[in-house]
Image (cartoon, rainbow, N blue to C red):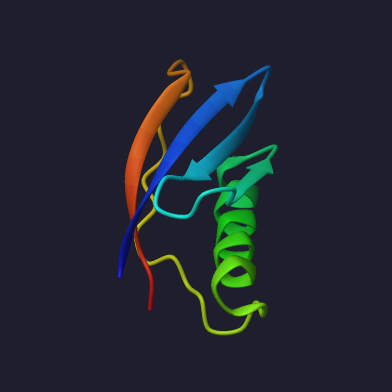
Length: 75
């Protein structure tokens, strides 16, 4: 399954929304925190558990970019 996350960089932190899952979003102070929070948010949205969701692709947007999109692959 492939999902699209729109990444926003504001005031020194990151937040993202998953376009295919309305209301599914996450935030983090770093991209690593954002990745982990996205995995948890997607898992809770889809299965009500954090087990078994791993983001296998997560490219960091440029720090100067306010909004970027990336594809997420779930396994």
